[in-house]
Amino acid sequence: MAQAFYRKWRPLDWESVVGQDHVIRTLQNAISKGRIAHAYLFSGPRGTGKTSTARILAKAVNCTTKNEDEKPCNSCDFCAAINEGKFLDLIEIDAASNTSVDDVRALREKIHFSPSQGRFKVYIIDEVHMLSNAAFNALLKTLEEPPAHAIFVLATTEVHKIPATVLSRCQRHEFRRIPLNFIQASLQAISNEEGIDIEAPAVTEIARQATGSLRDAVSLLDQLASTEDTVTLEMTKQVLGTASNENIKMLVSAINANETGKGLEIIQSTLDAGGDPRQFGRQIVDYLRSILFFKTGNSEGLALTKEDGDALEAHSKQMAVDRLLEMIERFDRAAQTTSIGWQPGLQLEMIVTQLTQTQNVIPGESTGTSQKAPTAIRKKNSPVAANQNGGENPAPVIEKKTEKEVKKTDERDEAPLKKASSTQAVSASGSITEQWDAIRDEAKRKSPETAALLNSCRSVEMRRGKLVLGFSSGILQSKMENGKNIEHAQAAVKSVTGQEILITCEVAGNKKQISTVDAGIDKDGMIGTAISLGGKMSETTTSED
Image 1 (cartoon, rainbow, N blue to C red):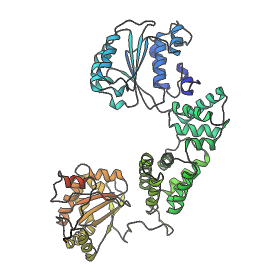
Image 2: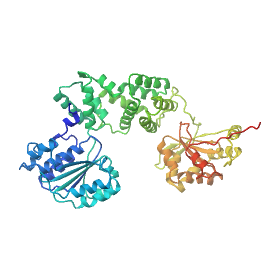
Image 3: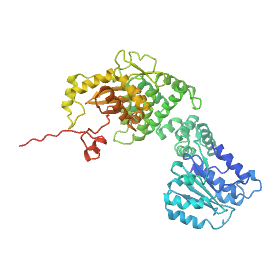
Image 4: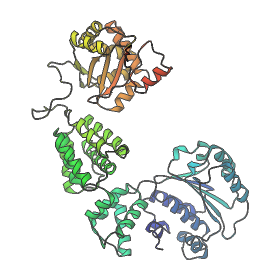
């Protein structure tokens, strides 16, 4: 059986570890000076060399060569035994499979026995965050005062799950995502050694899909090497289910031009060509992230061709920051959920449709007549409110409804108890329109954060007796809904208008409305809980025979 590439090409010495010079240099200096710690914690993303470095450390502390700077030598008996997996004093434990306190107690009983072969017993506990709380507690004393012949190396991808008491007993080293050019060089070197004929663009595509994990990149190369004699870019995209950069550029251009049909056509053609909707969503997010870097003047660190750089720069000049953030948020969410449902590309198609129905306005620029009108149309001579930094924030668009429209809405959706009648709703709408600046000033006295969020509103409208605030992103919506911001805003409205009006929030342009439990309904009861989770009240009539 052929050995997998990621095992065959695992680093065997310090020089072979890619992209972690800050960790390797520290460990080498410690070994050469004889300052070896009793416990290490290696944390960082998957596939960045944590376990491989732990094995190299185990070789270095047991290596018999006399030159400290050459450890590990990979030629002495101990180094060879570790390379072959036959060294009795290197104990690797998978914490995901040994999570209980009994497993740790068994380890504690055996740790006091002297090493069988080498100078040190080295315990590598992989994915240590999977241990139970009781297991961590049982490990604490051993970590604090281990036998002189024992060294612990804990490896984890989720360091935030490690108790502080454990962290304080370890020498901590952070492994970073491996840069794109390092992964490219490693893949090319492995391809040359294995005799794999691979195109340079295919190497770049594999490196991009690995997202900083060298192990993932090597595994992908292993998969592609057995597909055809020559690994081409086209074949790589087909196997990995990725779309061409050209499709992503055209899709972003279609969204910017509000061309719904063109955007849907691009998505359909991409999926028909074998593209994976989840992967396509990730690529869109990656492209939009690069646009954000250009928009903020931080594009130097991006590894790009001149053609891609020109396209990104052009798109960055066409897109407003809030619009760009909204797109990143929506496509990122879709990239995590596109596998759900019987129609794989539906999430992407819905996002493109929603985005192309709203306007992309860059501050200080005219939108022109070629774009479609936004969902909420700004009134002429709308007041402009000053923000806290002395700049200007456009006042939110206030949608007015006639008394007849409000009455018709109220008759169609009568609630058991209402906060305001239809006539009061019309009055409130007018009051809010005329006194919006005063409401924001009042909110500022109660909470500067609440006032800042009100300044960020895209639209404000009275709907079914409630005041609905529209925000450009779910992040702003969540901030408004959390804490006491809603309470401060409602208090400000009541203070200025004299009316108590419920406030709800939504993402502007998104028809989904946040459900609010009306007064008179027990919020902790069955009905209140159902409404708070998105349910709606409806009337059911029964007829008697």
